[in-house]
Amino acid sequence: MILNRSLVGLMFSAALVLVTSSGMAHATDYTVKQASIAEYIHLQGVVESTNSATVSAQVSGRIEAVNVDVGDQVEAGATIVTITSVDQYQAVAQAQAQVAAARATLVAEQQEFDRVTKLVAQKLVPDAELDRAKARLDNANAQLKAAQAATKRAQEQLSYTAVKAPYSGVVSERFVEPGELVQPGTPLMSGFDPAELRVHVDIPALFATAVEQFKWAEVAGLKPVAQRLFPTIHSASSTVRLRLNLPADGNLLPGQWLPVVVQVGEHEGLLVPQQAVLQRGELTMVRMQDNSWRAVRLGLTQNGQVEVVSGLKAGEVIRYE
Image (tube, rainbow, N blue to C red; front, side, top):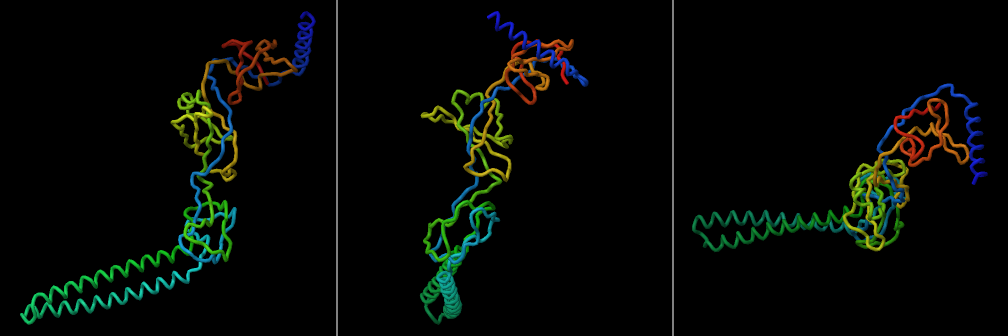
């Protein structure tokens, strides 16, 4: 033990000689202060997209064109896939013809109703004729409305042959090629909105209350714009899921793992600037105002400052370049 103490003393003396000889041309005095020091846990979270979807076919047909590929940026409403539309065009034409026929029938029945109305008023035909004419007119009206509804449905089916992007985003998967036959429900493409990403991370359940209290987290240097702690504990892992909504960042992708820092506590302690601390081998020292050196033991690092666990007291003045 005596030999070890002597060796440490020699190392300390050598360090002092080395540092003192360097001089302090631009010294700064700093008064050691008591401060609140945050406590963090460091975890890994996975990125997911808030807006992600798989677009599927809504009509039967053959793929005519695929206009975008994996990695392409698309705008909302852009046509990403085209399906052959011959059958749909024929259905629209047929429905429109039925509308024209129904409209002609309605005009004829309206004229007949007007004629019978005059005859009934003149007592030339019985009232029952007017009732029958009114029934035929109502039926013609109903037939026209049905034909118009059928036309609307046919036009809607035709519109489904030009598959649109539901929102602006990036194509992540492509499932079809030109010439393939598809049915309603066949997946065509998947995509996500890179401007709406979030990270989910599983927090040990014992920190759940503290996480909710401090509401501070950081994801790979990014400050979340919102956070939500799930109200249930996963029994198998004894964790609680924390969801962190991220600001827009074009460098992040769904499925990516990122470092997550979450505040879970705080305590009072002494903080000094990191540049005031000198490391020489196993020795950690700070220079006092009178240019003497003092060994210290360090704790947490926070915003360019480091906690001094022992070796200093609040109010003491240290000096550093």
